[in-house]
Length: 389
Image (cartoon, rainbow, N blue to C red):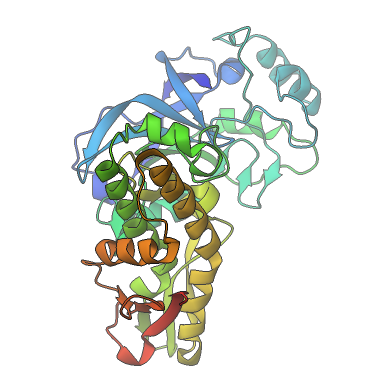
């Protein structure tokens, strides 16, 4: 679905990794037309985007090339089009009744950029949602977590875990923030409201939160990415496996020991998932997009292996589900061996050939993932059975 967004200058916080990278002007705030009356000044431009997730948008033209992949401007926190408490659109007429401020109601009735007649309106509200964010928007606490993870990465790679980096945090002007905060049903979001300015390789999700996903329309994905030969499809599968195994093993890849606390720490996932919070690039590489739920977690030494196994199990079904959709579509189009297990093992051997942290243990089947760690501590190496005989 196309989205029009009004562009305004904004105060931003910039990712340290991108301070010296030449990018188009990204010190910007992007408002849906329905909210443009909440600011006194007119926008400097109105741009076209495509919807992404329930509160995001992606530009239609690439603005940067990172690690050989074209990336597009993505903005998180541009408003939602769906009422959070009812199966109906969220528009100005419904939110006008939420505020007790007559000036806000007047401004909502007179947007600077009128919404298009046939397009659903999008609204950023002040209602508390997911604890750290307002419904339709983004909270500073969550945005800082995402920015911190992005700053740990080498542009798009964190120990092999691929991510779509947050380049800037755009801060809403205080007057706009307070006007938006008045639009709430039950609980007013107390923190600063911001937007994440991100770079993404596509808006194709794995299963949820997208009109076009691997899980719901893999044939369209093959067409969209022009996978026109068996060789291209196999390379796509290998890239998928190469980039998702690091997601399953992120804790081990970021493992560190804190002697002061006598505990081991690594990155883990909280309320974010492979199926809805990652996108797939045209070459098959999976990039995690919604980074706000990735935080460090500490465990005692005797719990490290358990934590590593738990993290694999957390995304294992989603990992295999998407792989199966891709592999079935490749075989449907181009043919190939029908032995499901042998094919997965063979492709994993190719995908993990250069992986520093994971090896495929065993000749043929059964096959296990031998998961090493950033400390090179052999006592914490973990074997995870992946394919049975």
